[in-house]
Length: 386
Image (cartoon, rainbow, N blue to C red; front, side):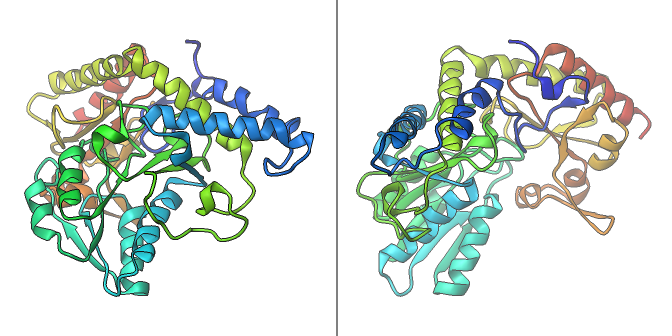
């Protein structure tokens, strides 16, 4: 595969869990729907024919990636919006006066803040489950938290910082035993590992385009047939009545094309190739900095592209500042010059020093062995003086 033009000449990009460059094949596929095929898919004249066909094809491509039926895919403008539709939609459709929602401590803010708003605005009871040292939820803890008013359980497929893969199949089965719906934010997992909604047992699942080489602003929510949701946008009845507004056909085509390419790569063994590069980076760091490199999160049960490590005696943001050859992330947040530990790593029980030392190195489609060598060399040099 030729190098990506956006990555040429810049620092090595190991921040794919934050966002991905748009695949040129995706950009090419969407371009005609920004230029020639402008019609409203809902219109009754010839200008609507091609946009309507392309929208249906894109819906089918997203459905194929996750093993759903095309009619179960609702296009949204972001993963956060898809999460909002799932959580708010389920709670308001339940008709309960004191509905109960369960999530977990390392969930994305799109879910945690929606839960907080549901509590504040609609009197929803919210339970936030703890996680273990690997960031995982115990099915037994979920079982103990369920009650007769639990409407929905929302647990992400893969953590955005550590890559930890939650036991979704087991958790969904526990939720269904008590009659609750199960939502899974698969923003980080879709396209990186195989996902099948029937095997997972989920009722709702979020897919995000800019995490798999489509533009920002393209996402989707899988809604299992028969699951009632209150719409997130009211109006003309588009997207099965759940998200009104004339569809953005170009972005839908982009998401569909990205899903098709991701499905092809999964079938061709891309996760194993990425995991080998990730593990090579880890080995280079541990060999060059003996006794100082600590893995955060599970060693095995994680995304193939994600490496979260702390280096003893070093702060993550200082390491990256001293390694301009590398573009990556830390888990800490900076407020007026003061860095605070990642809430995800804190919930996992890591002490503040280790959490502040964390680096998230996330690989992608265009990551090469030379990139790994450059990144490892830069980080080792940065850490050697600390």
